[in-house]
Image 1 (tube, rainbow, N blue to C red):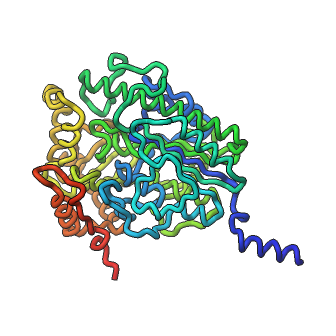
Image 2 (image 1 turned 120 degrees about the horizontal axis):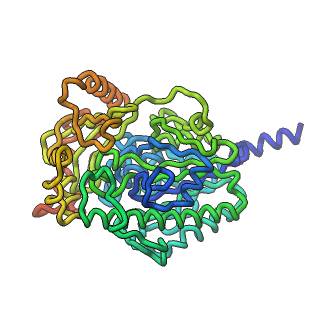
Image 3 (image 1 turned 180 degrees about the vertical axis):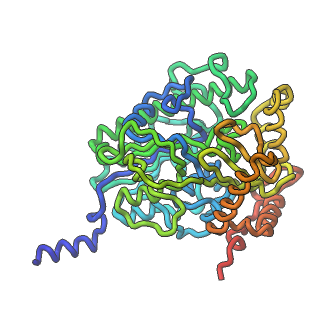
Length: 484
C-alpha cells in the first residue's frame, strides 16, 4: 500500500511520468509549395524527403491558415486561425497575438513534462508566449550561415536527456534570396535552361525560369540538410519513438504564391512519420490544415487537450482508418507588411474554391508589391500572354468581391466563374458556409469598421508613398473584440 501511495504521489508531482514517451520533431521550411520529388516535381531531387514520405503519410491536400510567415507559424503552434490568435501580419512589423497566455503546443507539452526546444526563427509576438527550454540560431539566417549548425544543435538537444522532447527546427530555405549554391549544396545547381516555370504562373520568360531554377536549388539544399538531421535522430536511438512532421510555412515567394489566397500560396507539402503508429507509404487526399497539427500532437503525446480548437486530430487519417472528415476547408489573408493590406476569406470543398475579397474594387497593393520587387520585364510578359492568363493577372490588380474556381478543371485558378449563372448554386452554397464559419470563429472583420480602422493605422505609417515601420502604431488587439 505504501508503495502504491508513493507512486500516486510521484505522478502528482511529476505529471510527465503519466505521458506517452513519444518525442516530437517538427521540421519547418520557408516559402515553398509541393516542389518535391514525392509530390511529382520532375526537376527537383529530394531523396531524403521522398524517403520520409515512403516511411509515413503524405498529405496531398494540405493548407496553411494564411500564406505568411508569422501568421502561419502562430496558427500551427496555437491551433487557431490568425483572426482568432491575433497574429494577422508579420511579427517584424509589430503585429502580435492578442494575449500572451494563448494556449499553444509548446506550453502544453512543457506542462506535460517535455523538454522543449527551437532551432531557427520563431517569428511570433510575443516570444514569451512560447516557453522553450532551449533556443539556437534564433535569427532568420537568410544568408545561410553555418547550415550544418542546425543538425549539430539538434544533436546536442536530442541527446541532452531522457525525458521526451519537443523540437521545432526552422530552416531558411527556400526563402529569398534564392542562393543557387552554399558550401557546395546542391552539388549540381540547376539553371534556367533546365527547368520550366511553375505551372501556376501561367507565363514564361528567362527571368522566371532562372528564379524557378534557383528556388529548386534551395529545395535540393534543404533536402540534404534534412537528411543530416534525420541521421542525427537515427543515431540518437530515439527515431522509433519520435513523431516527425515536415511541412512548409506557406508557398513560394513567387507570382501568385506567398501573400495570396491562391493555391500557390496556401497549399503546402505535409509529411508525417510515426513508427508503429502511422501507416507507411500512405497518401491522403483529404482536406487537411496545419491547424490540425495541434490537436494531433496533443493526442499523440497524451498531453492535456486545448478546448475549442477549430482543427481536427489527424490520427484516423494517419492510421488509414475510415472516418467522417471535413468537406470544406478555410484559409484567410489580412496583410504581410504594411505594403499589402488586402483582407480575404476563402473556402474550398473537394472541387470548388471561393475567395471573398473584403475590399472589392480597390487596387490590391500586394500585387504591385510583388511585381515591383522581383520581376523586371513581368508586365510585358503578362501583356503578351493569351487569355485567360492575361485576364487573371489583371483581375489580381483590382479583384471583384468574389472569385470562384473549379480546381478540378482549372487547378491554377485562371478562370473566375463567380458571375457565371451556371455556377450560381455552387457559389451560393459556398458563400453561406463561409459566412457561417466567419460567425462561428468570431471573425473581427465581420464589422467593417474594424477593417477600416486597421487600414487607417497601416496607412498612417506611409511617408511619401513608402511605409516607415517606426511610424506604425497598431491597436487592433484592443478593439477587434469586446473585452468587457
